[in-house]
Image (cartoon, rainbow, N blue to C red; front, side):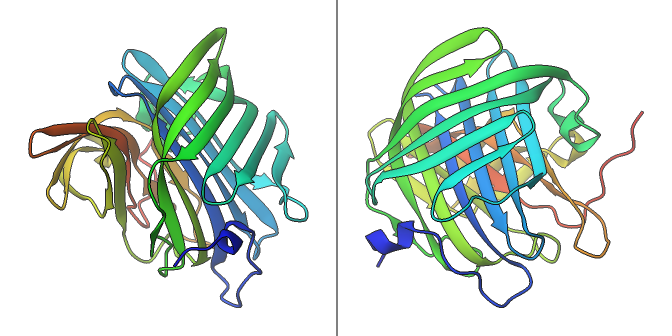
Length: 278
């Protein structure tokens, strides 16, 4: 069972691919807006990987990817780099987290440009959001079964460019630790909240792929998954050399037995080199 002590940082294990990560996803009730942040401490390289994205209906993807962030010090989860400040705070274990972000990303009209060099317009991205538990933690969600996820209500403010958006929706947070191999085998995951308040998380298998290998639809058990907005990430090659991997992440609509919900899904495509620029 997940305990309050699990919310703290964990000592690195001996495996060379050991890492510890925190995901915070959010989606509006109508699926028109969503985003996420991910902070991953990578002891083998002495760095932190940080990703963030904001996506939605009628707007470009705003994305940020930095794999050279200095690791947080002590027990805090605050990180800084050029054009980036992020602070993840456990206010009450297993109940309440807050996320603060001040950063510059790039706005991409074509989300697949995230695979090709992230050439876009520099855009300010900020978050001042609260994740408050709406369900009990679900265990076994780390790469080796070490970790947990939790459905949450999410509220606060989103800032993008000159726009300030008051946000009130649902989300999912995941804390995982253990060996994570981004290059050897694929994985998939989807999680969200339905309009009746029920939640789910499950592996998700693509049914249809569009251009650049971006999923268009998928199934997660008895849940039909429809992609609303893409936010793909290019994962650097294996330490010592090798092809990069693609991680299509997406804001999705979920349908199950007449119920509709929204959330985020991801599908790792290991060893997939980025498409050639044209």
